[in-house]
Image 1: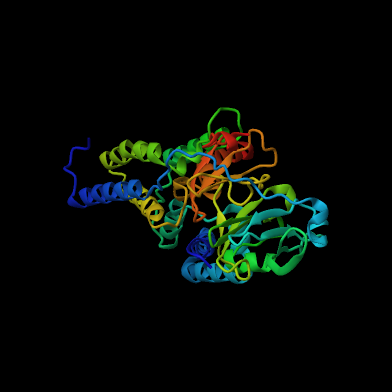
Image 2: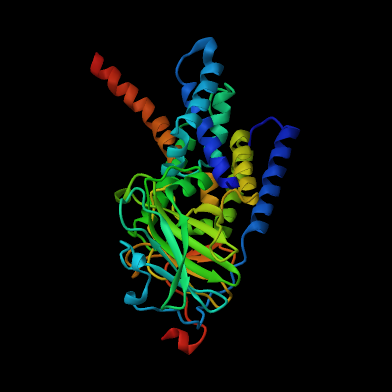
Length: 182
Length: 228
């Protein structure tokens, strides 16, 4: 066992618990989340998620913890979701060899990434986006602590991209469904 | 800027971010300019490998131990889902089985991840440390691999510090291992990723196995002999 594996397993358990809280269980919300977390660890959902998606980013874990704690609205709004999708698109395009260079490789020697985060952090502070400033700080501290060998791992992961896509597409899809029912 | 003055807590958040950013800069691993080592890779004719290694569906991996003997690791032939990685040591003529050094069960126990099967192994001796990298397939060979690293300090009898290497942004469905690794002059290693060596990236590792960088091509050799 190692730190990354233990983190990955427990974090996927919590993600599954946070997912369960989206179902309107009413007063049983907390119990449903606990049961879902336990179930995902016991029946092997978390190990499969860990194998397929890798350890979740601390960004996604923090959002899941806020969801479990009932803090609404989530900091992942439309604008931040678009930023996540933009980052994922950049990583995907650079990995597909369409353009030269590998953006993901920057995360091993992340001087340029850290330099880019300076204006991002100042802009978040200026706009009083304290939850996102806190999330970025936690991501950086997770990297410092040796939880991740690549800074991108702390910032973004495939499940966070799926969540961001859901946030962006939720409105247009709801409108489309409503227009078809008329 | 918003009209109201910044509350004291927001300054605290900014200071935390600044400290975290500085600490992250301090934590970045050193990466002096890489140069390939002149050390020649050990080679053995396929007919002189242990019989089980000759039947392996993947190329066996050979390395030279500090005492001069050779060590070979190979993927077992047979049921793809239960095939394990085995190891033997010898002088290139006679071989002594060390036994099973990685399996689905040992991988799941160490990394907590589900694996449907294992793939190509790469064995590498660095001083008293023996490194093993191998592929683990979360969903099967068609979907991509996770690369697992394991370390032995007793010549391959026991393996520990088994962990998955983060090599791409797409979780566990990533590149497979390439052919032979290349030693660096500083004791580190260039680990090939991807099946086609031409154009496939290389993972630069420190002598401890820690990832230092990912490069698109091999660095130059440190001596004229190594360039050949």
